[in-house]
Length: 69
Image (cartoon, rainbow, N blue to C red; front, side, top):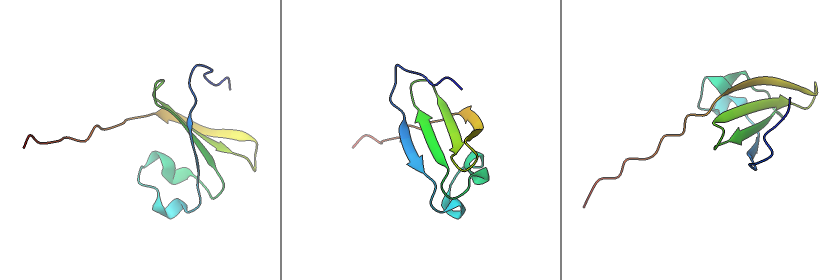
C-alpha cells in the first residue's frame, strides 16, 4: 500500500484490544500499529507479525461542542 507523503500520521500501538472504543478497531490485536491520517480521513491497521495491512477505514473526528458562557 502506498501511504500519503504529504502528511505525518498519528501512530498508535495496540497494547490492550479490549480497551479500544470503536467497532473498526475491535479487530486489532496486541502489537498492531494504527496510522491515523487526519487530512486524508483514513485509518490503517497494520499487523507487523504478518507484515500486512489488516484494514483501512474512514476517520471520523468529532469536534467537541462548547457552550457559550
